[in-house]
Length: 328
Image (cartoon, rainbow, N blue to C red; front, side):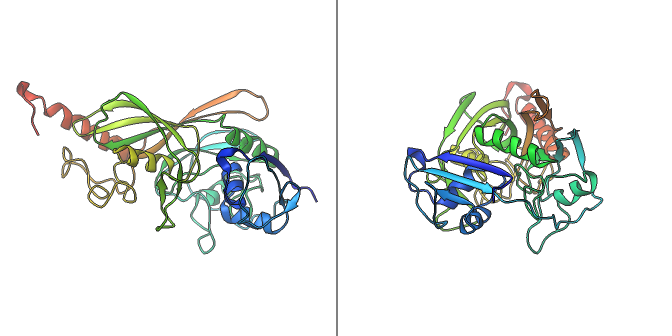
């Protein structure tokens, strides 16, 4: 039986050797690798019209088709949690996700998430995301704040997922990083994939193609505020790429390294509270509204912890130049 959303992809040279489940997870936003593997095992994904195993390695020129089965009733429960709604209409809702809030429930942890809050505020979320991810089109890490969109109906979910897959959604982030880049802007074009030894961590150099554009918004004594545009949406992409660039995100205990992961830049150490999370904020999202075809641009205010650290860095940078001398 056809699913509610049908997809067809042609395997490119750059996709050669990828597992079928990994390929589908990368192509269909909101679909995890485990969900993709389940689709393959259930016969909802085919290669050149034939069923394969989730581990099947793809070859250039092959056609991959997939159908998402009809959604099951959502089992996540509504909760009266406060959320900051930036925009909503009959098709979608855009929220400003605070740091520390998990986006969707997981087995064994089905409460206190953004999905639970959305189910309370929006009774008509799309079921395409499945039992625990209704309406979720894309995700943010637990400790990353900012703009996130969810679909209210299945047609909108399919339209928005198509925009993410086609890379027509424009996403701009703000990041406070260690060190001051010599250049005003740059590009990191480096694959991102699973770390060979630490499965919960990502690594640069192998995996799926990933492209990150960055530019310096402000320079401080020993840190910088970067504006970042991502043209792909790999897991932890920004954090991995900035660490590879030599300017890891402040507060990133996973990718900044043992020495930097739990410390502030020297100029503000002991002068302002440690934020306790990576200083990464999804600042702006631009997409096409499914019903009207008009482009929507939404910005999320910078959270307080990031503002406080930015102000401390600015003050420290100003003090270095007192009396015409550099003070460290």
